[in-house]
Length: 80
Image (cartoon, rainbow, N blue to C red; front, side, top):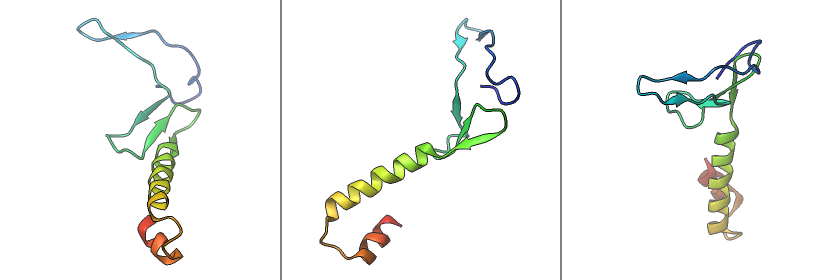
């Protein structure tokens, strides 16, 4: 992955000692943190798309289980 002025330029493949080629990617996860992805761009940029997707998935599953039976306060506490 490249960050900077030449972030869109193609690069030659890098090979490991075992002869495998490393792939160039558009985003990488930062130190295994699920919610932080560093994105290929002109300047340093982080993506929160994965965190949003995870939150909305969890919120939808909570709302599907609770339905309209719980009050708004209970739903907000469950989402927190």
